[in-house]
Image 1 (cartoon, one colour):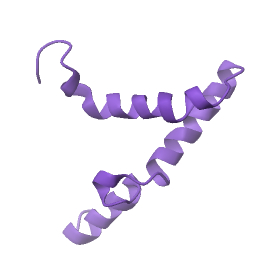
Image 2 (spheres, rainbow, N blue to C red; image 1 turned 180 degrees about the vertical axis):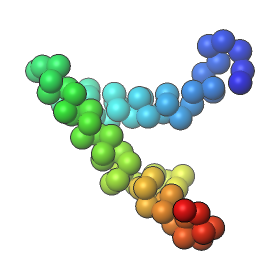
Image 3 (cartoon, rainbow, N blue to C red; image 1 turned 30 degrees about the horizontal axis):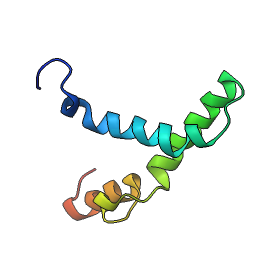
Length: 75
């Protein structure tokens, strides 16, 4: 852990929310709070199950984690 307010402490979360805002919410009109809740849930599903990540050998996070489980015998 770093100092209070150190951005690298939350780098993964900051990256996710940056992607959420710039790749999704700013590009789609959000007429109601309920619409936005559904849209954010859809983005989380897309982010974890479909979106290819270059840092994860161009696999989705779920596929990459599953491939590691097979290689290392994790449960």
